[in-house]
Image (cartoon, rainbow, N blue to C red; front, side):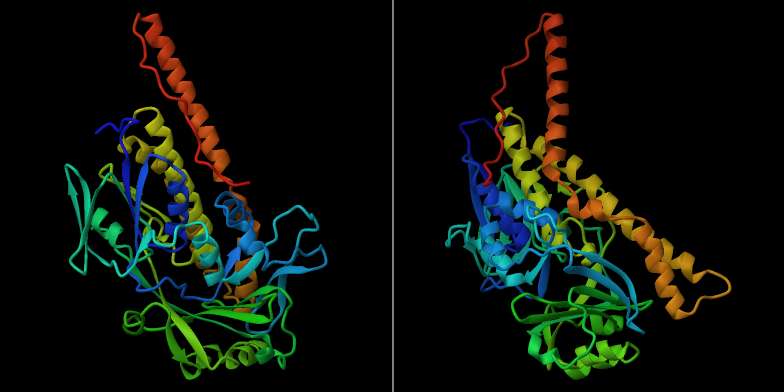
Length: 446
């Protein structure tokens, strides 16, 4: 079906996490879109601990109009303030350190509680837009569009476009790609934010965000600016245990502390400080060759790239998805093209980026195998240092500085060049190309 300028495009977003909210903000700015948003939660609340706000996250918060809501929680540092460290978790030895930028115009690299990001995004959305208690049980593709059925027996649609922003356990992805399977990674994450005073007695706590490494697990610590202290960990747990874990369930200290008995004294004392933790079973899956289905479904955020929390930049990836999907819909609509052509454009821009991210993870896995195979065998401390050293040689800064707006502009120049060449070819053969509308961009806030 070709969408004409007189028709509304019916869009349904499944999921109201950071990615779904970003998509909603972008699509609300498109006048020809009739938008619906659904979430299975009975109330919107962020489960987790902290979230990193790095360079590309800031870029999109500005575009989404939510940066001011986050800026109030940040403090710009100078070149003397430690930004981050990597340490040997067994000995506490410093392996690498970086400092914050001294550029007063550079966006600060921040770490805040997840609920603050959620509130910032929700401030840009009408209060009654999101329909709660809407857990999807069935998705149907029909000639009229995509219809969604919920556990309460209600249905929604048909939609011209359904956006799956429903997380790593995406029901939309399962419908679109039934052969794709997630698997338990063998690890759980234990996370918590506590008052900084609870670790005030612990000596040698670094002043910046720090990863404490062993060969199989790690601990992350970060003194937040507002009198709080964040701890995020990985621990090995059985598959039986992992499959029983609900997302963000509360667990007592006794379930956590024994995993870190081999760590240095600083970490053992830090881990012993909280009385209660949140537990998350870590699942992941292979890369999808495509993140679109049947010309009417697009995956976004964790639903499109089940990376199991790798890179700590999932919100930014989802924001990038949301922007490009909205711009693709707007661009093709102005050219009187189909939704399918918009999704193809979205897929061709985003899928290669995810291929690059998976390549980094594969490279880390290759490094781990290579280091483990060194003969004579390295000690555990040597393994930690050698693995980090090799991984540091391949800088991943491009992930956090990636500007998808420039990628979009370059792709559209290519599209316009092809269109103009096609028009010249038609004129030379005596045929005229149909007129096309002026191509707008999604409105953005400075």
